[in-house]
Length: 152
Image (cartoon, rainbow, N blue to C red; front, side, top):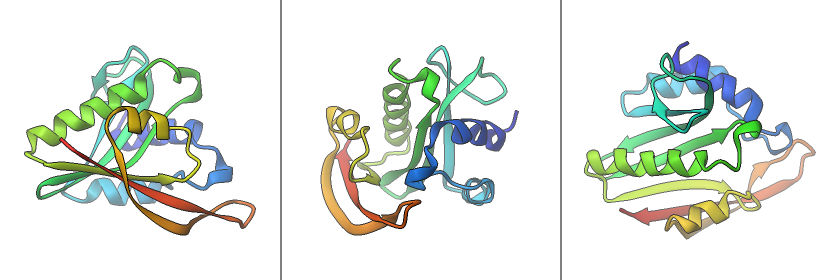
């Protein structure tokens, strides 16, 4: 299974269409085609693997590198594998990769009511910005985006 296939398998299962957070196959493919974007895959056993090695793909993180920083573009865990610490494993692997690339800071953005906020703050992320009415929901309403940063 390719990285793209693995991400889309998780994406189709992990994201509620109401929030409009899921990316299309072409958005993910275009992102992965960029030289400084990569993915981490976690399997159902909590191991970070290449997609062809994963026992059963359970989650992914899509990451973009820039000089001195790394940005978490998207992270998802399939519902049946949640509450097992796999999101934390992906984030710890994200931090490790950032350190290997000599990044000083990591960033992410999320919708204001995302329940993953508690995970992010428990790992040291701090709110550094807010974009009013940034996300448009399936019902047409809008919700703020929150930007987080962490020094590593």
